[in-house]
Image (cartoon, rainbow, N blue to C red; front, side):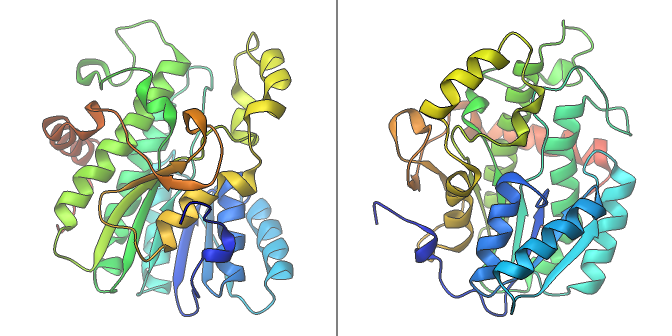
Amino acid sequence: MSKWTEADIPDQTGRVAIITGANTGLGFETARALAEHGAHVVIAVRDTTKGTAAAGRIAKAAPKAGVDVVELDLGSLDSVRAGAGELAARFPRIDLLINNAGVMYPPKQTTADGFELQFGTNHLGAFALTGLLIENLLSVPGSRVVTLGSIAHRILGKIDFADLEWEKRRYNRVAAYGQSKLANLLFTYELARRLAGTNTIAVAAHPGFSDTELMRHLPALIKPGWRLVAPLVAQNAERGALPTLRAATDPAVENGQYYGPGGPGELQGHPKRVNSSAQSHDRAAGQRLWEVSEELTGVTYPV
């Protein structure tokens, strides 16, 4: 299937899909497409006003679909616990958890818990949320955890466990983003190993170069160039969401796989299975990151 599109999404009727950051961009297009194919979608977002507006747009596109909004800020472990508690209570059966929300290239900041913003939000927030909801997935045959990676996971090369918070090095927002995205893949592959033999699989996807609001924090020196090259190399959010949708719904997807655009450099194109860096498959690094993440978040998994 070389040209997988939204038309290839199987019927999702009866399935519950939770998507973080689904009020805009890739997350919105993911939620919309799943709703149009029958899923009950739950938009988990920081700003519930924006989330409600997005839910209204989805309801217009898919009038028969159920759409809910839950407040959840991945940059605050208290918010993650509160949001996960509400989600677990309201949806005892979860078929899809899509860890879509994230931040990219902001100036150096910290989360509510004092973690470097990109690592704390993109990885630790997603790690905690998944751990708090995993029991609601484990009882559901065919359930999946889909976490968004990025081609940027190759930027840094490896996780610097001695300085996860960038306190000893000069802060580099691009490299810090790369570290958080490498962490997303190490987490996915370690989770996949731990889920072996259960009802649930863990997979990852990346959108290539997609022109979305995630680009709002591009460094000032890069922004003018991005505006010039974006029309040539970037795809819109609807196309950028296709790898996530395939990872979430294609019956042929297997535990521990990674999907991205199939064009040159994986920048754009129809989604297909792709490869990630050797470091992302380092089992020792994955296990160490898991242990560190449990310690930092206080969340442990029953797998």
